[in-house]
Length: 438
Image 1 (cartoon, helix red, strand yellow):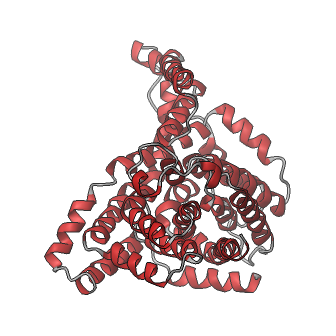
Image 2 (cartoon, one colour):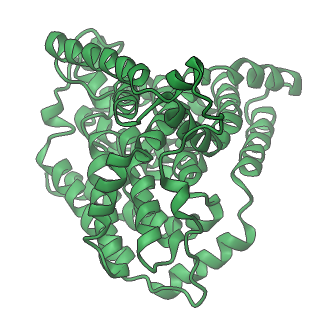
């Protein structure tokens, strides 16, 4: 395993382009497929790309804010103390790996946006304190991203009365999907495999350490001169951030009382924002932390629209439909969930937005499942797992974590490529076992 992983790391570091160039290459591949397989003209494909380009603006802004507010929260004095206390529990590389994996996995399970920032920040702090190969640690933190937990949108949508496919498949409760016994066992098995896989990796001969100074992770005030003026006093006063933090906290509490606690992406952003405002000592300190965090979001800002354009071409050229129908033609009622998992993983590489992929491919797969008599709950979870599985080698989802860590995709993808194979075998094997024995 170690030899295979080292080979994968060498190949990826040598040949994998940057995340931006990879997005351009995927754009070119889909463009050619649309012209050849989809029968579209080059002008039509350009139009489809342009129509899709702006479709992820809202989601892209949400991701920027998740990263920004989470990073700013991590730079508060209180969070620095908490992180320091947590990382002090690990004194060896193996302990650092296990602690980082377990904490990140649990955070991803609760909410992928929360896990993305929490895992990256924990890995960064751990890398400052433990003599460990930093890309290995960051890859370990990202490995849990594939887990599908209570914030998984697809099973939640299908369990909601009035969803857009209710007439075809009815209501499928989460007790049959997310909280089924087999799915819980699969989740625990993946955690165990993830820990085992990274513990089997040895430190390379040339260890890459995190390059950062203590000043990088401390609350920062603006460079404005302290001249005692009104503007200076209010910039360095506790009152403005305290007021905004309490206002946001009041809204959150009111929402929980009225509607119960729901940890969606907007809630994660607001929680991070609230805590950051309350825990920073002044507007100057808060904005100083924001200035440090902004650079980490540059990959999201530039590349998310490119993937939106890819999704526009895939959808409008009919490529998703053609691919899904090919998979359906190969399936039986027993093997349909397995084929759904594999096809969702393949399409996810080109359309990494889970909600967008479900809106395009989901109805096709679910209607086919109903037509051939496949189990709808297993089909839904197969699609859900497939949607998360290939995120391991899709830089689109790693961008927030890489931004915080200060690494490139090629630094971690060698490890994640092997983890993709291991996790894929485990997930696919689960669906084969269900078809055979259940």
